[in-house]
Image 1 (cartoon, one colour):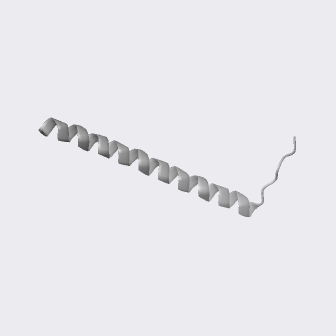
Image 2 (cartoon, rainbow, N blue to C red; image 1 turned 180 degrees about the vertical axis):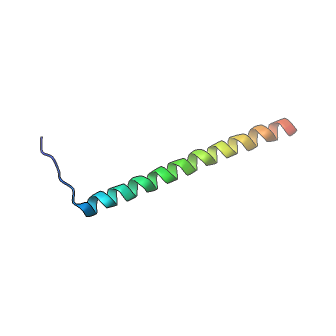
Image 3 (cartoon, rainbow, N blue to C red; image 1 turned 90 degrees about the horizontal axis):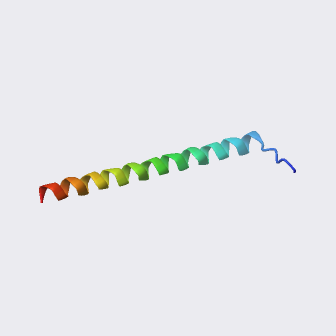
Length: 46
């Protein structure tokens, strides 16, 4: 199996994309969590 060697520039680029994806994923999880809390709290009041 052939191994592909990445340059330092490619490694930094990949790391940047991974960090960006992690931030977006964490933001979505937090958003769904907040929406769920609001719906539950709203249901208790009404």
